[in-house]
Amino acid sequence: MAKTIHQKIVFKNTSPKALYELYMNSKKHSKATGAPAKISAKIGGEYSAHGGYITGKNLHLAKDQTIVQTWRAQGWDKNDVDSTFIINLEKKGKNTVLHAIHANVPDKQAESIEKGWHAHYWGPWKQFLAGKPIKKSPEM
Image (cartoon, rainbow, N blue to C red; front, side, top):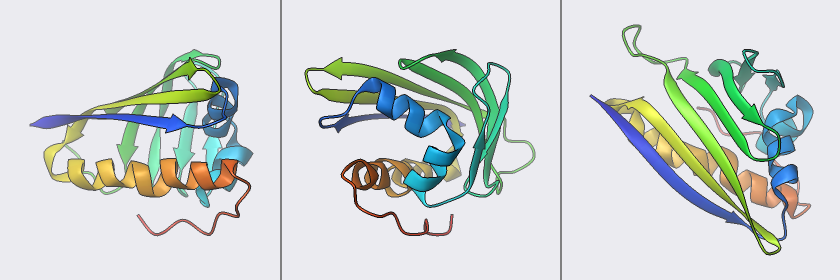
């Protein structure tokens, strides 16, 4: 059985453009997470994050608004299907609300992945956007 993770994170004084670029620009992604990332900015393009621990392809991109990707972690069983990860960025005054949906996550991986989004992305992103240095990401 697979699970779907829903997260809603508010980034204060941040534009959707800044968050989109933080995720889709390889250099910014790497700096903001403290781990190597290579991300194509094209639909159908491949990406890897956290030194290849996470891999997938871009399914749909709407600049500064929406990112839809296949998503797979290195340690998943061979019979686990790729999951789908969706980011929607919503402007709310001076803030941006990031709506994340991570669908088809294997049951046994769901709890650690849900926590991992906060530990490896949302928390470090807030630090990065506040001008605080990002340390090397903890091991996945």
